[in-house]
Length: 508
Image 1: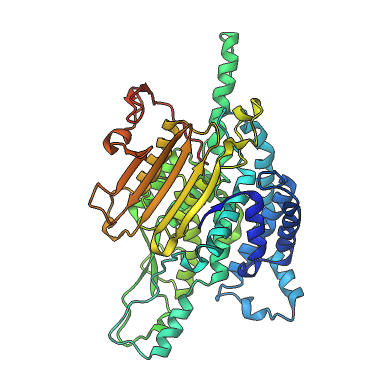
Image 2: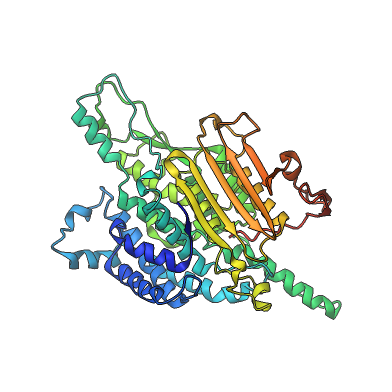
């Protein structure tokens, strides 16, 4: 399969597959249909997504997602079976009432949109993050309704283990059904992850504004300058600590009493949360550096009551199966958002919500001109690159994409920097013998064709291949990164020596 990703293509594909988006309400579907009508009259490269419409779509999709998750919570009276199809008005009323905190979160998103004009001046390589998040969602919709399926996304919930005293197959199936994460819930999870993964970006970027101001005021000599700084105060720490415990934790099923069958156990407190210390350390470091992924999680925990109501067992147990299932759903969303700016978290498979976000985030290359490009009048030009998905078989661990620039494009070092990111995500790690991944990313830029390939069936430390114009580059040389001292490194492919101390990445 070959599909060039553009706004028009993604909008059309989304509308053609609305029947698969079973969590959608009519207001959100109507906005998507209006966008389709506009897209049909334009060429693929034409820009037509207005921030006003996208802001409205962002809110409606998020309300739909949280509502879809709430009405499938079996612990609540207003669960889905209380909403018959013959009473759509009841569902409509419940939809708005089910998402407490959406007003505050929407106000924050609008402030982000207004503030982004300032952020464009913070650095020459700053890129759009408002339109971007909707495009990321649309890419996910395309991948999960075209080459792959929403059911291919691994929501690895440890529901039941086989026990010698297992009862009938019927009771076993009833228990497994009780642990199932349904298709509408999966779509809702993807929607929250895609639309909210960059909410913390303004806070991460603020320090860049201070640097720009300092550089300008330095021309006035010794002038008193008060830098705008922010830090978390003591009263923020309980929420920060709770978030840092939820994201790195997993569900564990306790040993059940002899003779207790699965269906009975599902109604008892036989589950608990267990903190995974290696995740805790990595995400704590990410928060220390104000990375916007973990900050986005804090924004969600602070605004949406849905996330405030995350169950967490600090003691020996006490969670029922539905408690545990609901914790796992929330944790999966938060971990995916936090992980996309925490490359210290490695990945053993590509069909997870976390890796799907990284893929879609990286695929969204077009329509995001930098301040430098806008200043030079090149915004919206072919420098965006043609992005194509060549293969996407998530369940089989196979993915291939290409980005081709007709003119301009990233420098060789920028390409290598991104490839180093992919390698870090797929690096040698604990249980990496379980990997079944064939991942390939091609970039054609400035007359050179770069190919990054990771194939897990190869021998250890031979999984990675990096080719430039058909010639393999030596991994131990192109993988070298500089430290904080600003020393220079030899460029393997070009044979030049240049300063590589500056991070050229423009990743969201």
